[in-house]
Length: 99
Length: 529
Image 1 (cartoon, rainbow over the protein chains, first blue to last red):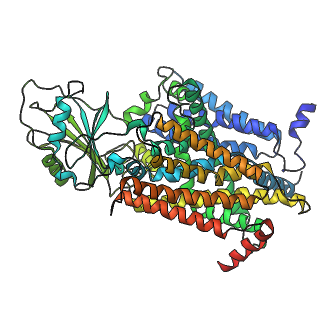
Image 2 (cartoon, rainbow over the protein chains, first blue to last red):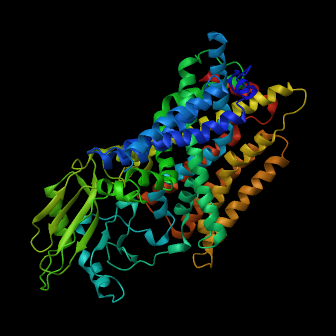
Image 3 (cartoon, rainbow over the protein chains, first blue to last red):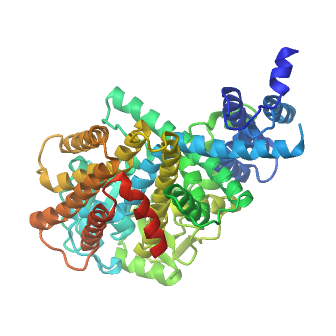
């Protein structure tokens, strides 16, 4: 419970980012952005090859954007959820598509 | 937790993230941008740096190709089929080169047809500047240390580029939500204003170039999981998935046993030019030469469709029969899949393939502005740090000294690189290693000097003056060693370096001498503008 409270309580000010947010943003952002773009490629569409080019081209930009989005969550818990929930969905889709 | 407080926290955090991330990556980004500006002029620099390339430019339809081709075909050690002829003028090169996938290229003087004594590893100034641009910083050929460190540098620059993209996105949001309009009254406010103003104008170009840079340093290395997931575990190389789109396979015909006389190559080029007058031809491929089914493939850049072709993926081409000059097949600039144009558009501003000097200069000016804006960002942060001391003690911060050495100290260090290009004899053993070593030592020396000089302004002025003298000196040495080359790209580089040197000397004269003068200097300058 105390861990939940530690994560769910908003920090008193935003002048310190904190290691928790930094790590969640960098690694969570990487995993989420990379796997999301993999979904684009994993679909059996007529544009599979084209989507692969797009995914490769823009995965670093997606990483940058997603990491920023995660780091700007209102609470530490929020940051964690912004990483975990979409990632679970994406992993589900990928698992379903995997032959 | 009320809404207002949450919004305040969000803004605070956004600003903080922008500043912290900026301080972490700014110096690496500055290095990349600084050397990138030299890399923009790489085609001209690599001609300037080599005495063997100081030859006149030629019209590609007036060259006697057979004379040079004959020398290559007679060499028993050179492969014969699928020879590549790179035309003079391609990427600024003045020489004509004949190469093959499995053989080192041969260089020729297109006017006389004689083999050029290429300087090879003895002269790689432009290539070294380019390596510094993308993080291959300690490239000691094949030694393990050099290879490992180059790999590390590439990753470092790649991660830096991702960080920069985060900064750009957060910066754009900051510009939208805050108004930066009040008249600056302190240097800090002025730096903030310049940092914001410059990037408001150039951020789309800056973002696009950073994105393509991040792609080159990171995406291909990290493509294995994507290839596995996309192919259901069957492929581990991404080429299997992107290859069919980006690099379609060419079918190679088998040579017929009989020989036939070939049309002169200059006739074939002229013929291809009439078939597609929009293409600027760069490379020729000779397939089954001297056989009855011989073909010539002419690749180039469609100058009327920038952003869509010319880079690494889309090169319009024509295939002609070399016997009678009839058209066998044609690939126009717009004949490719849509993702290829995305890729070309993303890379166009970074590679600037086939682009002329004016567009290159424009992009270079945008990058100079970006480099200055990064500098102002760092100075803004330093001003904020200095405020904490409230002028009770003189400000001496390690970050200030490190930035001074990296951002300003790099100028004289690069100047040394240019001077050594003409000072070291071309037959010196390990010439490039001496050049690189002295360059790094000079750069390191500027770090010591930055820490030694208490007054940062004075040290900056000294670095700028030294840099200016070195750049001007390198041009004078060039003229002294090789003479004066009127009206050519080589003279262009000379003039460019002279202008750079003069600007540096002018800055060294104009910048304030003491911290006390700084306040009036920056604000007075603002009023005059």
